[in-house]
Length: 307
Image (cartoon, rainbow, N blue to C red; front, side, top):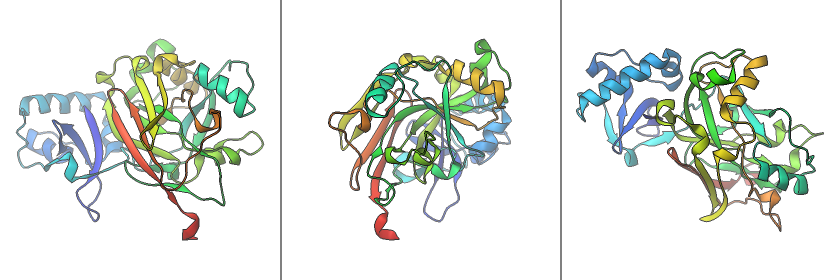
């Protein structure tokens, strides 16, 4: 299933929906029609665990396009928000997780050429999240090197503490897209959180695809364009540390909880690694794609003038 958070107009409350043949069906309303007590927010649905996913999937199959009194609107007529508009805690970012990106970072970002022996972990605060078509801020007082990184986002579904690699994917609720926007000139003494954690630096969406539809997350093409020109293209098979390894490693020291998000790293083609270097500026449009999930589009806007 493709689950979304949406609103019908600017004043409407955000609600949980599921995409069926180009239609966004309100989950809580459909659940009432189907005799299921389903929530109207994504985090509440994730909290219910795999049983709720199975119940909703079965009910949708039996409904065969009959939604009862549930709100069902063409996707073009609703506004999609980030699937989890406000994560409960910081997003887990993974750095240097594609071999080709390590090579380009060695040349451009003073990164060691040695392969990491363990995942490189940083974080982005919940306030960094924006959804489809929402702007990414370019503040010229803060950065002259605003960069892009397309990533597969992993959403945790059940508590994971000290899990073994072979069991790790059982804890995944689903997958989405995240762009790890980075101000390359704001790395501070080797620390990345300010560079990567400013407001709007985590475009996320357009949906969460439940894990049953992506049984192997290491087979997905991902790519990114700026103003329609392709800048990145790779496949998740090229990750240094695979999704199950990331979950097992993080859960050794931190309990992963339902709704937690792991941004699993980016391949080569970032602006800082290009010759000459390229960065994003107001007026640019960024589009990030992951196979089987979709595309998230975000314009870059000038926020310096708003001060």
